[in-house]
Image: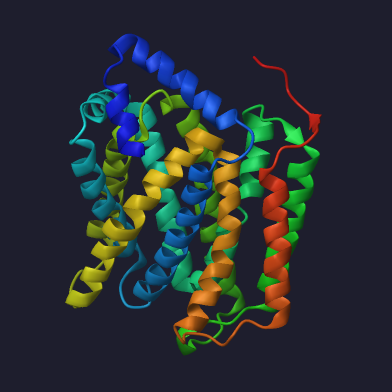
Length: 339
């Protein structure tokens, strides 16, 4: 569907095509309700995100988290660039995106360097399940940024849903602090640093979603992502070259990093940016609330942790209800006037 849309848009003239794309993306992001295609995109995104967290959590116990961040971003850059080169419109949009240097550099820093460096290093400190829990707070951070900085409307449904989901997430971290694979529980200082890094990366990504929508939504996501991931790859690789020793890395770990970037993360980028344009950053961020629980269940199924207890399953239900309330429409409580 993503690729067919790119082909269909090739028939538009260059000047009017960008105006129509901006209109379409704005219309999609403000549309109410979910189509079957959007529901399928959402479910697939959650599954891929959970799988990527499980693999990343395994890899950061064996190699440098910065190497994992650089490798997954670089692998995604290669795949996305090869796919984008197949289509005339995405090739054209790649040139337009490359000409917007400041926006691309800012988005590359926020969405890939800051996000992946923060969350991968944080995972090395406190584990994938805990950092996944922190990233599940993305909807509330996105909601606050949207209302304060971007004039997003507030609704009673979104406020209640976000509070309910965050309460379930906080309850989860209090009830479930197990470290998978038989590791020891981190100390207070380690927990603090890991939590701060995870939160900083999550905040950077929440800001990324709005800036992407405001500055580059007139271009196809397939045409924009190669430029952004390319910049992110360069930043991360420079950090690896400067600070990470590269000797003694097993071949299977390199294969795992390559698979993380090409098989899991590249499709996530396409689905994520498509949903940002179709449904907006808040809807897309709300999907992340399901990820830490999927990761926890995956750890249990893989034998890395014990089975989740009934309290954890209850908190999963609470978060699911919160997600449903957060992403649905509702009566507006307050809305800022348009500029």
